[in-house]
Image 1 (tube, rainbow, N blue to C red):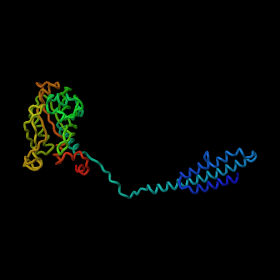
Image 2 (tube, helix red, strand yellow):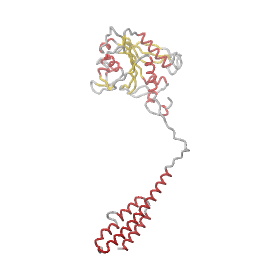
Image 3 (cartoon, rainbow, N blue to C red):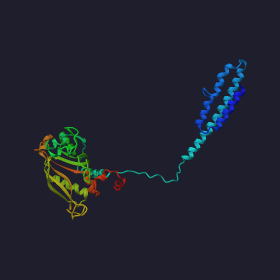
Image 4 (spheres, one colour):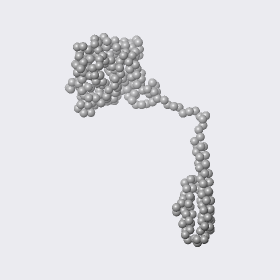
Length: 339
């Protein structure tokens, strides 16, 4: 038995010396001290030892076990220290090196343009109102005086969810919803994303943004509309900006007009930017149609109002002299960092 224990001890010492990592060391421990280990087998064979020899043999087994456990612990401590040392060397930080550049983002050109538009109108006493992008046909068309057979309701122009629900083609439904509440007077703008079935090119996209405005009060006239938009144009494009109103047709306003501003690039003299005309179209507007007021529960005999709408992307393209609207959505940081 003594020779057997000595052999187990020597084999354990040899295996511990040969172990190169903690996993191998654990295999040695299991192979010798585990439930099926060599030393455990000796303990299980104690029943075959003479009764008077058992205390002596048991002491020898415990001594060998203690030596092996001590060697295992010393080897484990040494290996863990070596691993820790290697990790510290690998993960050392040179505090004298320059720091990594922190790339901080900034607002998108659309957001910058929108905040500027909102700032101007809030300064005039307007409220910013938002509404749902998935809208009822009733609000997107019917309450805006657009009948069922109007071309704007053709599926080639509008994304229909079903017969009664569409992706809004304008933010005007927000105006109808606010008018329905009957809280007068109203001075509001409604910015937001809209959707139309357009092919993607330099000036069109199936998803874009609009900013529409509405004023409803007693004794509102076209002169109020002209004065408001002239002030807006001067604030946005410069104090020397002039405006021009051209007759147009919109189902929800009467009379209606399109608004041009004098080219802020050439001062109205004519250049490539304004295609030689000296003027740039920016928005549409008009007096709210009496039938629209009626459908929203407002007495057209007591109240009048005006409305206007502009494409936010168009404002951004003009303000920053961008030639292609697709640049706003391609997320090219080389382009976006310019703003």
